[in-house]
Length: 58
Image 1 (cartoon, one colour):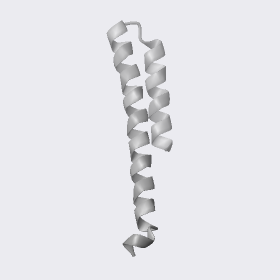
Image 2 (spheres, rainbow, N blue to C red; image 1 turned 30 degrees about the vertical axis):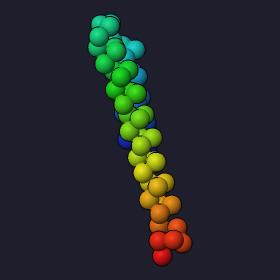
Image 3 (cartoon, rainbow, N blue to C red; image 1 turned 60 degrees about the horizontal axis):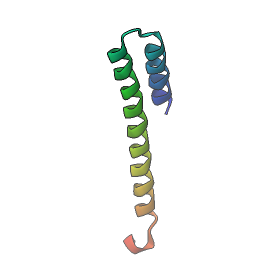
Image 4 (tube, helix red, strand yellow; image 1 turned 180 degrees about the vertical axis):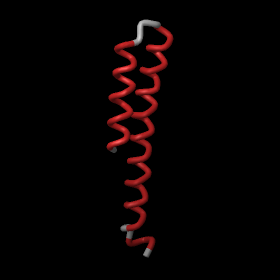
């Protein structure tokens, strides 16, 4: 989570300082990608936790 927050902060800073429209769009798309990856990682962790604690799998 720490790396994710740092990366989002860096990308936001790059996007606000960028004057070229295409580069700004690239940074904003990268921010959305990081958020989506974090969501999917959390979902995978939750699924794994759920499968470990499921009595059907014991």
